Length: 321
Image (cartoon, rainbow, N blue to C red; front, side):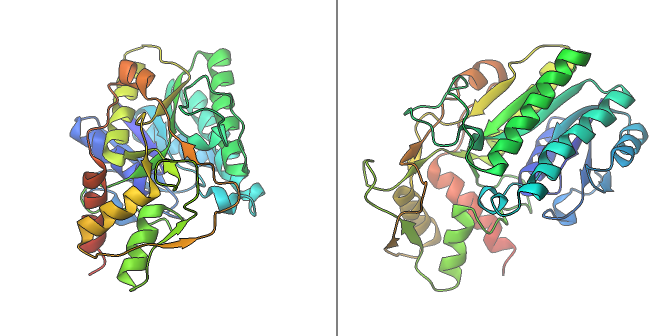
């Protein structure tokens, strides 16, 4: 039973591949390397370079590798930039998902685990986000992820597809050797880059209605997240049924200032972050319940905040010396 991991050469996708290998489940990677790296794909894992928009190419990968299920991680993931590139975002995230589903249907593949996002919620008006919290995306990225979830739902109704979507919050850390977060927009790389360049990391606003005045977000370890994909794949492969969506959240969250303090401790670079103005649209707090994922997928937070910062820093240092 082989699983196809689209986007398997990216930061999250490569961790998913590593989790499948740890579980002794065969995988094949499909990636166009637009943001991923061939070096993130472990030696011995079949790799197909190409686009999810090419349905015939995807069909060929499925046939040649006897694929029986798909973990669809590939996509355009920059929410802020998606406002300036809505057509590209929809092509990659909506049309790409439709092409994957078409290829699966034509090749008789009946199970998919989809990489969704907390961006489908927009700015939630509740302290703790659950799967029943209304969706109200505020960017083309968030909208495209929600539409892709609808595509999976409709395909399930039409064909009996076994499917579930995992909504990620702030994914951090590193647990796969040689794999690290390369995004120019994520908090951990921004902090590390600033410190490496001799700059002081910046907090965007410290006057929010939170315990220390800085925004609170839900940070989850990428290795813990990857393990949940394996758990979901096992259920679907065994013919089981999962909920349409699951939040992968901590239930508590951490503030930006807490992240800064952990970074100073882990790196040994003592600093006092500078305080900048609030960013427009930044909510004070976004934290999710992971109770349903814990019940059905064995989801849990296995790593502390300090451990997540430390693993991310160690991999960055190993590959920037």
